[in-house]
Image (cartoon, rainbow, N blue to C red; front, side, top):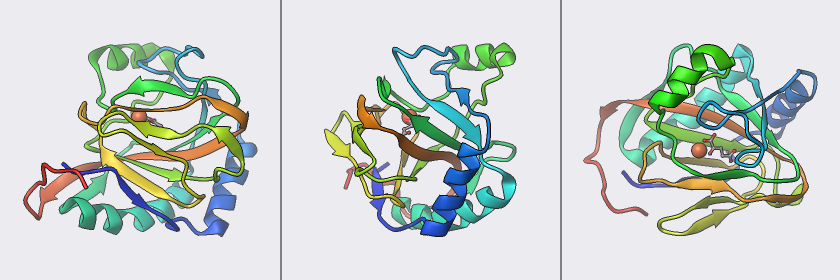
Length: 194
Ligand SMILES: O=C(O)CCC(=O)C(=O)O
Ligand SMILES: [Fe+2]
């Protein structure tokens, strides 16, 4: 499948403010990678998005993703959206977004949500003026993104899309993560990225 999709101005400012206020007024937890909290691999805190806000976010994302990938997609029942905050330090090492056996096994006891699906969608809750470093990067083909606040980035949650978050050198970086499943392929799958 093609990707990543990058669309600016998807998230209205008011909704972004509501999401950030929610984050700040809620106790966050450290986010794991492969089920382990290790700040040398990922220095990130998360909160789950409340249902009222999550519903609004879903509506903004669905059509853009479906049109670009030539699919009909759906949110995954019972799976929360997460707001991530990265402070100064390691962002998130290179990884893919497939759920692994070890992650599932560890999730039985570590209290971490397992967020799996066919597609990853990210919304940037703040912009590059708020932090230094912190690019979302893809390995192949190489791409680095520090998009404006409100930008949607979406890509297949597969091993073909190795990615990570570069070290944050100043400030803080907020993103919102949700995954979707492909319900139906409408247009033939594209093998060329673009
Ligand atoms: O927060 C980001 O920009 C990337 C998050 C990510 O790659 C993930 O949650 O798998
Ligand atoms: Fe990821």
